[in-house]
Image 1 (spheres, each protein chain N blue to C red):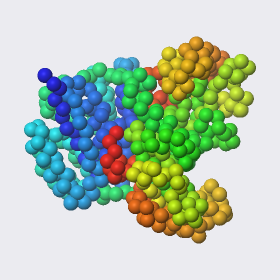
Image 2: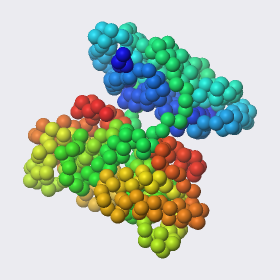
Image 3: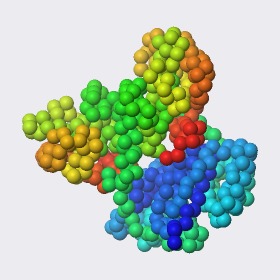
Image 4: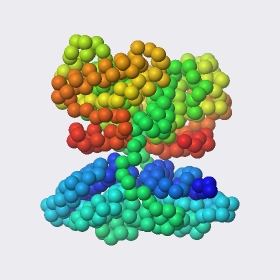
Length: 271
Length: 271
């Protein structure tokens, strides 16, 4: 018996990213079914909404099983039209808004289309954080390190860059990163530029076997990528961090999201 | 009368990012109340869960009003403990799992702690996409442009870099970006390196006044940042894109998320 595929449709008057993120979290734990995702974002007019309704009904007919619709639609009228579809609905707003209105004693504002663009101060601090992360990637620049919220250290390819960028884009944090390299291990000391910022340092480490695989993709058969060298660098970096009292995380089996949130916790950073 | 602040607590056995994203979407539209966020991620043991319960109850007592808890907790036993707290609950899993189980005819797997780290192929394609975006930022490299999913073009500071990075980190897309500069406008032609990739090009534009403000932060009183020059560059870039048949979006009032999802739609990119 082949596993049936079930169509899952993310519908929103915004980007649909919230719906999709929740959908991933929920559906990942239903092992018996495979899901095929579709997206209908930015449904902000009756025409688009009716078009989407027709598409859902068509799918339902063709596939012989009703699709699952995960919905974030702030406009009640459009939401009601969509609910006419032959589908199973997970309606995030419907489920929570009425009880929230009662709890807060205030009315939900159903206007769509709040601006989140350049005019928004939050946008600007996010872009500033991202520019900071780019300017301070891989020890490129040490001007202005004092304004960093966090400085990640670790061997090359231990996960510093993606984590820095995610911290900046998701949480508007100024995240720098600085590599620990064989010269540092031979000298037996942190890069001197980092000394003034001891309290902002946080380490990343990684299993040597994993590092070897990652580095081999970049520079196959190099000394840099050899398992022996990876073992040496990781051990030397961990020894240095231990001696300097720098806390660290192992990135081997953590997602970028997990790492980022754990770093925020450790540093008591609040965005 | 001062606006009352209401504490909102994101509680999860994972990162809590899903809970927080939904919370932002919901609460942003309750105008009457200000919210103060707190986070309790990674509650994956009974000890942590009981500690969180105590903290919520303490907050409720101190503040004299029960906090709002937005919860994504896959473990039912832990969830039940948390629900003893004196709080208003928005429980994402509770609300949807039972109906989904019935709809799918299969059981939700309540095991926590699925790995999303380096061992995961999804993780690797995401990191590859991010490395691609970094290597192809601002026209730095044109090797391997043919493997790009999309190449963003536009004047300096029109939003190409954040959009490229977001597309890579969120959707694992290989997004390059290439600046359009005054030399291109004088020559009256796209940068020649881009000619082979016409079908992958997408433009970003921005209101000249906004561009003037952004550039002035970087290089105050420069010709580069002057309103006159910004007007010239934006008009010339739009003329060039129109002539070349390159579609474009205005980034002035769009968030990075909105832009990214709209680009995916335009290009029929599926992650």
